[in-house]
Amino acid sequence: MSELRTQAELEAVLHRFDAEEVFHMQARLSDRHTEKSILRTMPFDSHKDFHRPERVVFAPFQPAWSNTALQPFGPAVHSGFDLIMEAWRRVPSLLAIIAGEMRNHGRNFTLVTNHGALFDIGLVHGALRIVIEDCLPADVFTEQSTVIVSGGVRTLEAVLVVDGVEVVIPAIEVLQFFTRVLTSFPTTITVKSLNFDPDLVSASNELVRLSHRQILERGGQLLAVAPSASEDRLLLNGKHMQPLKNGTMDLMMGTWALPVAVTLDGEEPSACTILEPHWLDTHESCHAMMEAIARQCHRQSLVEHTYHRKPRLYEKALAAYSRRHHRS
Image (tube, rainbow, N blue to C red; front, side, top):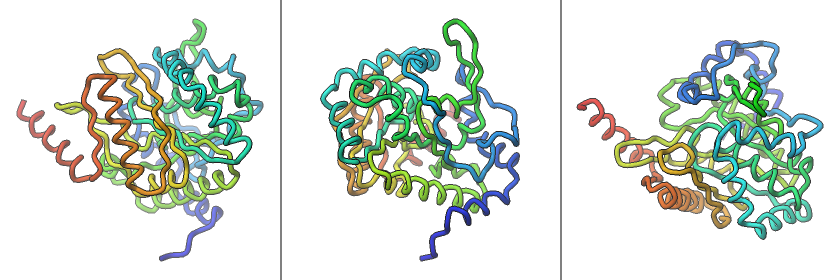
């Protein structure tokens, strides 16, 4: 096994890549999301730190935005934001436990959602930040929370209507209003087909793992992730969720997971359910958690959701859909 590289060594590797070329690579991760009404690809700007490949961690804005200032952004991103807040309000005992364990005992938690639209994880995370305020002040939550997202977010800007005024903000900065941001290169089946430079992907994700470990070592941290890494695919017989990668499961290991099932982008009414916490200590426990999320998504949307534990099963479903689609 090769010796792990230091932060400085990894940043040096990433610095050698042309920043604008990497930007356009990452833009390919978010192509499908630009079809959403609030998102579009932004111009490359070498002066923006989130357009530099050697940067993967982005601190929250200081001072932290108040919940009063943050709250209008939720409905501007998605009309279902209020129902997500209501889902958190239905579990007050859980909120008290999360806050107490983070503040008093240094317990780490992982907030896990299925992957619908790109901003679903941000909506769930932001709603928690607002609702938990009676137990955990907004500035404390902001300092002790991180959302892990695809590097494609670095290339997008959001066009929001807030209190009747159109506001254009880099998508990553929307998240920085209330949390730290950690960006990675997904390695799912769909993303692998894009053939990114393997040295770029490996160095970037190694730096993410190092940064993630340093964050957890502080204790009392909440990390939010939509671990299927690319939007769940709507095929002929429902939605299909790609299997978790080993690296993703390793990031969540040794934490209490807070699973959340969100269905915000289908024809059925939007819905959100906070599930029972899962202790993640094996890959089996991670797969079981994703299956629980899939079952709840099916119940609340009436659209069957299938989580695939093995890549070949997901590939088989995708191939069957492609054959039928081309014949039609």
